[in-house]
Length: 420
Image (cartoon, rainbow, N blue to C red; front, side):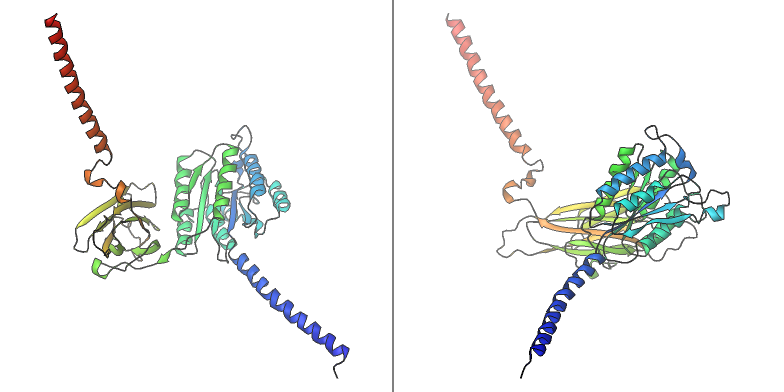
């Protein structure tokens, strides 16, 4: 006989099982959401030079604090944000100690705006400018998770902790392949600082911006924080060949590879009649290279005939150089369209500086996009000038007819005059 106690116990067990069955997927979903949450670490220079009063009549530190408060208010809910300082705690003259002066002011995670603002309010310009050590620590702050990772560095001067070159630190971070981007903002229009901050940003595919007003600083940091929340396209690793015949066939997407100095990489893309191939390539120097270099992207047929090319040259002011091309495949009268195998050749003229390792090759990023081409009704490319030929023809015909009419009227008026 089933007693009421057993029935109640069974009901409780059933409810518990149902609750567990419902709770487990929810927990798993929450874990996945947390793992994929975008992360941003704001790295602020709090060195002694931030006392200077040259931004909108106030100090650089005051402008940074105001910008941070407005950014914290506007940070999207799904972004995990942290704040790291450099030069905020040690006021002395010992360089060894000063170059260790970087601290996590607010940990990267779900944002408590009140707590973060209170932490920012305590900052006062103090010491050195250890940009390199701060970047290394900031990369550790962002460790873990599968979402995008971004460091936003705000500084008013160069690193003062050589020989730890912050540009080399950025290249080391990029070489780890952890998908971390560093954006830099300079508060002073200094050529040397611009070169250093530009190098840091470009080593990781980031951007450098010079700002001289508080509202500019606020707007730019807000843009970068919002950008971290945008969907990230994960590039696919591939390996190009030394000849077109052995090249891998790629479809639309983003691909990464490495190319040795003095070598070339080949890839293949199938393009159907009526489609257009759009391709671009970026090659970045993740080590010290000579100042003059270039990159060439060629599209050729399987038989070696060049179709179109794109090329660009660099002068040493940037570590990344890019170029692209477009190839529209004309429509075919065949009942069953046959794809054309287009070979893409990537060549660069970077050369390593003296004593620098040449292996592995330089990282390159290749974007392939195969889309529907222009409709046949609009395709008048055979004329070269497109619709301009129709306009030119209409103008010529109009002029010819007008000339005939004018000549006839002139002769008629002369004949009437003579008669009278």
